[in-house]
Image (cartoon, rainbow, N blue to C red; front, side, top):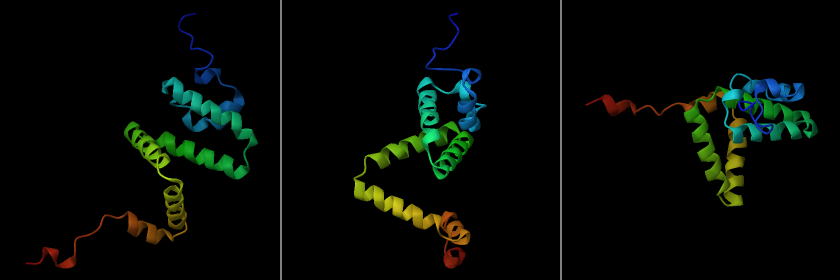
Amino acid sequence: MADAPPASDPRWAQLSASEKRVLAPLADEWDHLRPWQREKMLDITKDYPKMSPQQQERVQQRLSGWSRMTPYERENARRKHEQFRTLPPEKQEAIRRKWREYQHMPAAEREKLQAPEAPPANATEH
């Protein structure tokens, strides 16, 4: 049975019901993930039962968001995460604080920050 993946690299069909429940957002792409990616996701399933309901919800949101990303967006996210991890703790905390502030802003304010800046009104006048 040379075509069978190693036990540490199971196909979707080989996952337990509880693993499938946690990893459901990744069902369509599971068999295409790299072995190290599957391993990381399976580590999440081991910790999942010990998590609070809020932590479990956060995991589900992140997995859903990740499943909607393109390969380019995922690579960009990995790169940014690695850059963040190399920052000194005080800079990491400052970024976390700004992110919390952003999340608590009204939607209209967040949209303003996300929108590209329009040129000044007089920029088109000659």
